Length: 370
Image (tube, rainbow, N blue to C red):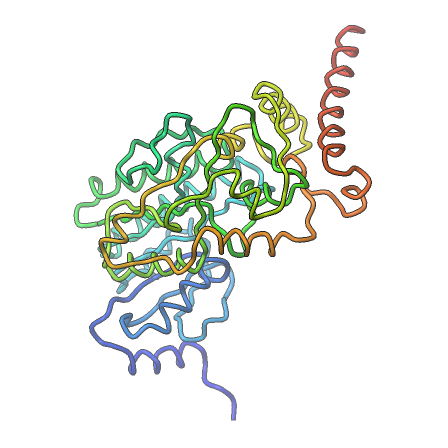
């Protein structure tokens, strides 16, 4: 006998779940954090039904799936009957074209917020990053969750996240009755690939002279549990999520066993900008600020709601180091094993800096011939 259609199976499971819980829609439900949250909500007795949305079907059979692009206005019809939408369909891939990434992230968020209001959804949960607070030398340690958002658009994806936050603040004014909750995780670890996780793939940890890096992580499991809290309306407003406390740079070096390579600020920032401009590295110079200055945050609102992280900074760092073992990255650029072995640690960095210098010299020579 053939197994029942997935939608039929989801309907049968609905009849056995609580009739009083919310119907929660999740965008970006087929992979990453979205897939983990979709599974967690589908298994929860506090959730009546999960509506999963993505451009492909995921493997959570108990969810009701809709295959579509979140920028499609037709999403409004698919959201009818949902109480809460958790919007996780974001592209923060380092290798994605920046203009295409922004077009997807911003337009997708606009569409979801408008569609949710049109469909009668009363709450939308957005997930950005604690990076929106900015990494600055004069930041409080830790930052209050109510601290001003002082980030600029100079780091990968942060401009998109700031625009998403702006859309989230504006939506309740444009659509009375719609509530927006914003979740801001610290450095996310667990199947992620970002400029900050690639920092730990380097043979040496780049430290800019005269700065005070501080490190606060967020394991994806803790982010998923915080998103569940938001979906179940156990916490609202704008709040951060991450491990309690933080690690100083010396502690990170001791725990990781990776030694530092210290460079003057002008050299580090200038080289990073040039390498990105000529296409040798995916990370703009703005990413370096988050390895230079503190941006750790309080997680007081979640604590007040009864939430506690299951992971410590030390444990997350250990998992991150295990995940990146065998990868070789210098200045944000992934190297093949042969390249990394041949170049060595400082040698690889010098080679990249030298390449930038050669490109500049060639450009000057060409201009001189014109």
